[in-house]
Length: 212
Image 1 (spheres, rainbow, N blue to C red):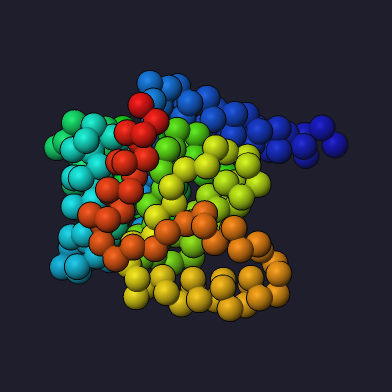
Image 2 (cartoon, helix red, strand yellow):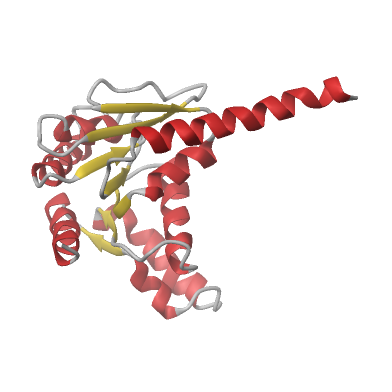
């Protein structure tokens, strides 16, 4: 019976080791902006180029930038951040597809467990930026919104880039979720939708400066 339980015990130790390693590697961060975005956007897309610029704008102000560390818009944002004063950080996850660490990271961490990685996304965050993406991006967005809504973390800006991309989600939240009283009207103020990364960067940078 004891032998059958051993794999679970070792899993707990692996989880603990990921937490300890992540905390130690990022302990020097005083604040960072976490950027979410899809893995399937290629270098030829406008979204990729905008993500590069976002990384440049944020890290150019000395702000550390955290992404999921993979390809697509994660790669693009790390790519823009890498030459700048701010630290370019990737929190990579082991997946059967889509996820391979991009080469534009000053600090690259690898995780087996999503929930440990999510904890590290939030621990040092002073702002979140959501770029176009799929289920993973939506998962990370609603995780951030839930933590702020329930006051499990201090409120910080959550900015979604791309009016056309996010309009349907925003309309659904207003017309269906709010209409059915599943959220309060104040919950809609937890995020902003803008059209350009320049606008997103300005919101984040102004917020960080106001806290200095």
